[in-house]
Length: 96
Image 1 (tube, rainbow, N blue to C red):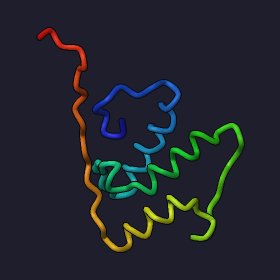
Image 2: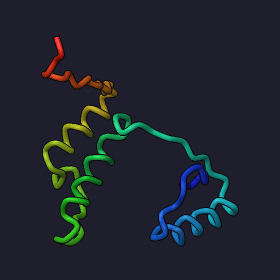
Image 3: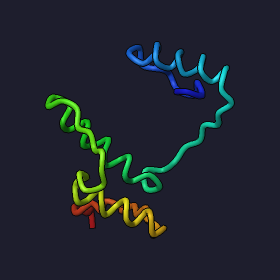
């Protein structure tokens, strides 16, 4: 969306325009990062989406993070790689 490669949903148009204006002022580089390379952000984003109706959740210290977030962060600090595994769905019904 930022690179104008996809159609922007109407509810995001103003935000994207603000980003474009900021990009004219600040020299920035945009690149795609797979979820596996940023698991902590993906995990916390999912928490925010799930708890949207409950209000904001803020983590100020490591000890406040959920245990899974702590594991993700510790693995990242230790530079332990995360592997993307895709599985193929096998159709159980066959014509044989």
